[in-house]
Every structure is written in C-alpha cells, then in structure tokens.
Image (cartoon, rainbow, N blue to C red):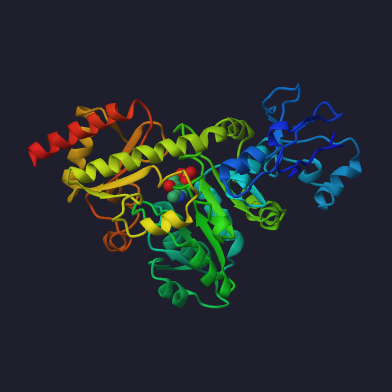
Length: 443
Ligand SMILES: *Cc1c(COP(=O)(O)O)cnc(C)c1O
C-alpha cells in the first residue's frame, strides 16, 4: 500500500480546460491534475481542489469504509505512530484518526474556506467544542459575540465553566472598542463569533475583529454556518473556521456533520495523539463523508438561489409593511459591510427574519404559512430546499434567558426563515403573500 500519491496542487493557471487527467501507475490511485486559476473565489478554489477517482476508475472516489488499515511491514506502524509517516504520504492507521474518504471531503472544505487544511466532524457542535478545548487550557478565557447559536452559547456560558473553568466574556462585536477591552492579554485565548449571527443576522466585521485580536495574540475562530460561499472568514483574517455541515453544506436536512478549517499545523495538532479531535473522538463516518462530497459541487448554485429568493421575498415582504431583517436590504445595519467583504455573486444569504411583534402572532403567522398557504415547514435548522421556519426565542435560542436574548437582538416575535428554492419563485411568493393577507385580516 501507500506508495505513490499524486499530491495535486496548483499547476497551470491558464489552461484549466486542458487539465490533463493523469493516471498514476498504481491503479488504486487515479488523480486528476487541476490548475489553480484563483483561490479567492470559493467556487474556483473548489474546482481546483484535488479530485480523487474510485479504486476501479470510477468518477467518484471509493468509500474507504475501514476502521483500521493494514501495513506490509511491522516497522511501518511504528513510523506512523512516531509521526514519520502520515496521511500526506497515504499512510493511515485508524479511522478515528485520518480516513481517506473523510480527508477527501475535508480537502474540499479547506478549498471552500481557503485554508491550508480541514477535517470533518460528526456534528457542528463537536467541531466547535474540539476547537475551543484545543485552544484553551483550564482557566482560559474566551471573548465571544453575545449573539451566537444557542448550543454554542450554552457551551461557553455554562458547560465550560462547570467542566474546565474556561470562562467567557460576551460582547456586542459591532462595538470594536468593547471587544478590545474585553480581551485580557495573556489570559484570553480565543475571539469567537459567527460570520452572520444566528438569528439576528448581524454581520461580523471579520477583518477589523481579526486585527484587534491578533494585536493581542488571540486566535480568531469564526462559525461560518450561515454563510458558506458568500463569506470566507479565513480569507478575511480568521485563524480557524468552523461549520455545521448539517445546514447549507449538506442541504438535504438528513445529516448531522461539521468541520474545522485552519492551518495544517492546527488541524494536525487537533488530530495528533494528544489532540482534542483524536482524544474526544468526534471524527466523521466515511460513509457520511462520501455522501456529503457529492453535494459540495452544487453548493455554490444552491447558495445563489437561496440568496436570490431570500432577497426577493425580503424586499416584497417589506413592501407589504412587515418588519423584515435581512442583510440584503439597504436598511440592515451591516448591508454595506457585507457588500464590501462578501464574495461576489453569492448574494446576502438564505436566511431572513420577520418580527411579528409577539410570540402569539409569530406562531399564528407560521401556522398560516405551513397549514394554510403551504409555503414552508415549521422546523428548526436551515439550508434545506424547502423553507424552514421557527420562532427563535422559544426554540433554537431558548438556551438564552430573557436578558441574554435581548442582548443577542432576539425579540419574542421573531420568525427565522431559511428560504428554500423548491418550486418557482412566483408560486412560492403567492403562497407567502396569501399567508400575509390572511394574517392581516385577523390582526
Ligand atoms: C446548527 C448550528 C450549529 C451546531 O451544529 P450541529 O451540526 O447541529 O451540531 C452551530 N452553529 C450554528 C450557527 C448553527 O446554526
């Protein structure tokens, strides 16, 4: 096993159409050469990522569904454990550690985010917890945005304090001075925030936040779950990017998964024998990794359509007089910021919020949308092809108490919509409008 492996990086910038498909002598390893035109656009970077063929020449790689790997010589195992041989040379040992199929997906995640390396996990939460535990020791300190996914907030606010005395100061990250003041030099290890926050849809000024953090030796970790393709936090200065792949990247509403993207040294440390990923063990199943690999090629197309429809619906709902929060609208406080730091042509994201005033009205509206107009489904999560709607305050952000919700910009009547792309735009709009008309009749 494990002789030649073509490690394909950037070869020829200009002739991507003529990229030769190179058959490596070892028939197990067919690898396509690809030229790297530009790694700035995530779609271009993805197309340039190494494409691995299947064992028998299939266009898709074979699933390496093995928990353990054999070697030909006893000394090879010693060398693997000593770190002298590794996945770079196609040596694998055990699938809680690197697995080729998971690594294939991970390379795509690294290309998407413009990082040197990545590795995939069993969930978004496990990616987040592994990264934070890797970066913070007992007694460490985190500065985090006050607007975070409920699970992440609970992890930082309660769980880490209880289990390992890692404490967090939550700040409004749009107040750069407050962020700077919250950092305790020498003690603060991580600045943590979401590129587009859940569910307030505040957009983080990643370049400025990274500058402040780096000045004080703090590692910047960004959750990019809401904005794959449209924002590239690592290209804007973040050190580590985490994802819940369960959302847009999967797109099917059927898989729980996550990823950590960062420098090769960080990913290798996470995966090393003393690393958080290796010891806590949340690595991804190769069968899951294979399925997800097949969805990455159309992520760009999907994000464009999610964004296109969200902007269209946000604009029209606002015209009908509803209180709409969407970063694509000019009245959104970070509209200009997103325009200036976002990747061109992916729009402003697939999530919009409508504030209905009270939780009762929010519930009524969602009920009309689902049961009367058949516009979408009442469900948590996002990134599905159907529209998913939930009332954040009483569901995914219910880990936050009233005070914390207020700080996070969550109002009780806020309905979060992950706008789907099924059906025609006008068909779905007429359903949405029908529900609004019915709601207005009754209220
Ligand atoms: C869903 C979500 C998570 C958690 O991911 P899981 O895959 O459910 O573990 C983390 N961050 C954000 C922003 C999310 O939306």
